[in-house]
Amino acid sequence: MEQRKEIAKRRTFGIISHPDAGKTTLTEKLLLFGGAIQSAGAVKNNKIKKTATSDFMEIEKQRGISVATSVLAFNYGDHIVNILDTPGHKDFAEDTYRTLTAVDSVILVIDCVKGVEEQTRKLMQVCRLRNTPVIIFINKMDRDGKDPYDLLDELEEELKISVRPLSWPINMGKKFKGVYLLHNDSLNLFEANKTKLSKEVVKVDDINDSSLDEMIGEQDAEKLREDVELINGVYEPLDREMYKEGLLAPVFFGSAINNFGVKELLDTFVEIAPEPQPRQTDKRPVDPFESKFTGFVFKIHANLDPNHRDRIAFLRVCSGTFERNTFYNHTRLGKKLRFNNPYNFLAQSKSVIDEAFPGDVIGLYDTGNFKIGDTLTEGEELQYKGIPSFSPEIFKEVINKDPMKSKQLEKGIEQLTDEGVAQLYRQEPGNRKYIGAVGELQFEVIKYRLEHEYNASVDLVPMSFHKACWMTGDEAKIDEFCKYRAQEIVLDKDGNRVYLAQTAFTLQMARQNNPDITFHETSEFKVGSDQ
Ligand code: G4P
Image (cartoon, rainbow, N blue to C red):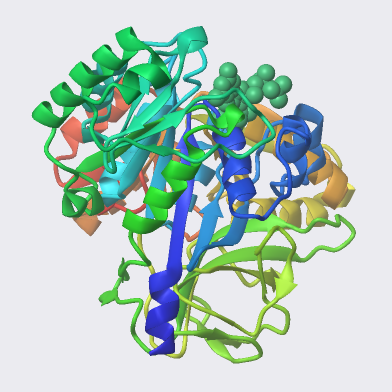
């Protein structure tokens, strides 16, 4: 019974956006409303970026890019809110995709001036693959942005999802007066304020009453009445089931920097967002209410202190109750492991926990047992699915500059690729190593960390490959293909054969000439919308 209650309390979600739309600011404000931090605005945004998230790698600090995915948990009323923060930089998109496997819903932040942007589209594609429920927050309403009706059309068209506004702006930019909350007929008047939480909302019993004219002026009141009538005429009331199936996105308007519209967002979020949901494994779906513990690792992070080689594995609890000092089955290794100091991320201060429930994310100290996607259970042999590797877009060969340090290099590359910083491919015979990543920045991170943490120095030499493709189909045909294309066949970390296609054209030809082989651009074929 207690477990059922604990599960119902939890809301585990990610905030996603194109860089600069306001994800960090919104995260900060949610923490503020959740009481996890005491003041906003007073703390400079940049400083928050460094302290509120776990971006502790030197390179991140230097660049001010939030590379790391972090977890921020807080209590809000009767709920426990777990925010899984994601890096905004596109070079770390894969990190973000993996994090999205561990959430039950997302909040998508849109800049009202820019509308839907490149990363927004890509991230939504990943959400659609998993039918992840989405709430949209249209930010920066204190700026002159696109017309709200146009924005809604753009969202529907570009993100291929139906929308339902739950709040409606009264003007924008300098003339922005606030939002009308359509779901409970009340008015939230705007006051630019970076440090204070927004004021009480005003209940509007009758939108036609002249008190509305007094509050926002006759002209705007008239326009608002028209808008509200139009919206309520065009859009059906919010269908929560459609939202939970990822088919319909409620939309809010606000200004994160001014703490405006954030409370309404959070209140609605905890009310309608799904509690921890069942998840698919290679054997069967696992329900969070099952009594036996299961969970999977979606992120591995280098330790804060580079002198300590241990790492932190972020594990999402999926079913049962995780308990400290209890032996669990690491299903990939067939090994029993127990954890003395598992910790949670409540209010940003790590504290050791005795138990954790579905929806929670816990940090486990790891001395090299975990890879991303690993599953822990109470004994059952199953493996969580849905943490695919995507084909990298840039490939480089690793050349050891210091033969005396090859052991360090091997270890460093092994560990960094276990963390999911990039993908490692080996070519047999000859043991040539290639690293594949989606952005240049990842190579810089690898080079930097190999030097600083492993004392190994490398050259990373660009290779002209276009895509890495995993293969399924007729085994004999695959063997034959690999023999014939030996120069372009490598092994991934799990020993799977991967075809490195040199160009889009060669890949197309390979597909055409080998109808019995399917070439996949993600390592997990049922999930990916590849090809
Ligand atoms: P990100 O994490 O999505 O990359 O975005 P972030 O929150 O860092 O916000 C990007 C910029 O947008 C920041 O300005 C931030 O202050 C600003 N911003 C966020 N919300 C609003 C809003 O509601 N209205 C307006 N006008 N601006 C907003 P910056 O100049 O890049 O950084 P900073 O100097 O303010 O820290």
